[in-house]
Image (tube, rainbow, N blue to C red):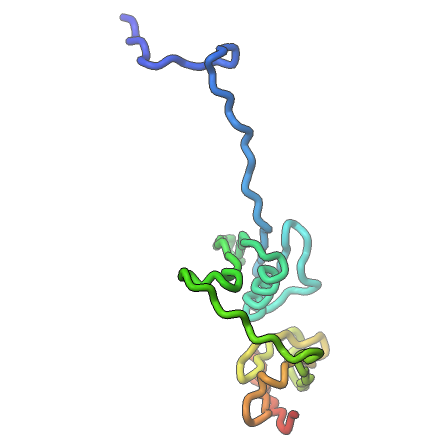
Length: 184
């Protein structure tokens, strides 16, 4: 018994009528891999190179990713590898550039700051934190990690301080709370 003949013609490399196949070009995105250690801290790499000197807290990871996207202006592939080997993968995309608000109307140009005016920064410090712990800055505008000796340092813009000029530092592990007041 013979097999039925196919209704199509198979192309071979020697066949003059074969269509050349285009080369396979992989889509390459910056690849961020965050590996969780036994303490719940993240060792972060980008394209195989360490991104942070020491592991960071989960709260700081989002800020770090935002910074990478802002600097590179491109999408990122992010893999989060948990201690049990479970891997979560996501593609993060940068925000739309100014003037692309999804409508046909262009966005009005932003009001430029006065000439020579940069952000006014204020340093906020506290003591008594667990070395390496994440410390929240309230009006919670960001998180940061304590140094090896339990100190924390944040720099905030004066405009972020609100009406009271007070900042609260809160240790996410120790519960240590510092109220810094009378800031300019």
